[in-house]
Amino acid sequence: MNTGTHTFRVAGQAAVLLLLLVSTLLPARVAKAAAPDLLPPCGQPPAAGNWTINASCDLTSPVIAPQNVTITNNATVTIPGGRWLNVDFRNRYLRILPGSALLIQPGARAYSFRLGHTFLNNTDGTFGYYLKRVNGGVMESYNATFAFYPASTIKVLQHLHAMRAVDAGSVTLLGTNLNVCSGGTNCTDNANTVALCGGAMVVENLQTALTNMMRPSNNQSTNAVQELFGGGTPSIGRAAMNTTASAVVGMSASTALQHKFACGNVSNNPYNTLTLADAGRLYEQAMTNDAVLPEPTRTTFVQIMLNDTNDNSLVTAINAIIDQEAALFEMPAANVQAVKNGMQFAHKAGNIGTAYESDAGWFSLPVNGGADTRQYVFAHFVDGATVNTLPSFDARTSELLRTAIRESLPLY
Image (cartoon, rainbow, N blue to C red; front, side, top):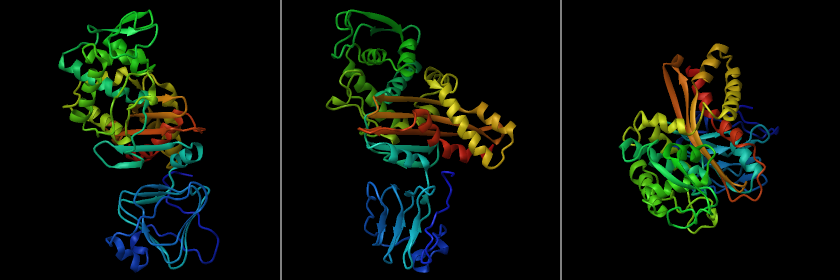
């Protein structure tokens, strides 16, 4: 079933009312409640099992219902603007009993978003996802401000800081060299030496180091970048990068580089943190704000990363979603191929085993016959999981992008 379908599977009882999506069709007393006194929060549904709501309340945050939802006892449930009730309508139902009502305010949704239920049913960790149209509104969001352990996903902050320095002329991609450990990891706050690097060290120019950091995600190159911008002291480099995050990009205090990579990971106190909203903001600012990163440096920023020209597995996964969505309205094959040819993205993922997994990036599709583009930023994470049977990173990322693809295809 399509993830954005606003169709509700209703139990076959005579007393069941159909859910009315348009507020003017709701009972008058409910429609007039569009700007009421605030009701108590509905809270969260049970971790497993059906959710019965028997007292009037407001959804104060996006909610993913694990099973069936029933509104009863003359209760009015309000979904305020910017909030969502996500029910798996392929397998579950939302039931509104006589005398009760569901009020969906402008900007709110009661719908089915497949990825949310994929996370809910396949991990016991905290999870979240985020999709935003560039220069537009948030399209999908769950736990967008939760500070999760990002593993290598946060390396894009180091990449942005470095490329801003390239743009300013203080370093060059081919002329600035870094000492990179190759025999072991130097977890001290001192500059790399052969001894601290476990007996072996190599020299990489900045372009090689950034490429190794952003594609194969080499931790030693990443640590050398911290050292470079700290003048030999990695912690000073991290502080400068955190200033870029807050003062230049406008990221929140919930996002911070706190330690080297492959040096304790989440056992550090404090450890590295990132939020989905901050990740989205970084990509949006880097890709659209010339004060943050102008051309042609922006193009080089993307070229160094995993992108649509070198990440074939993600290209394949996204193209499969494009095919599925295009088939729903019989989009001409030539146009489908043109959209695929014009698709662009750049992203950085990270993980510590299967307990901490995340991905974030930028995505663009052609519209208006290729004369324009519609751009998006995206991110998702799993944090602290002991159970993780989720599909691949590519499957998660492409499914998150389905909403963007569905919006953009008819605009081509």
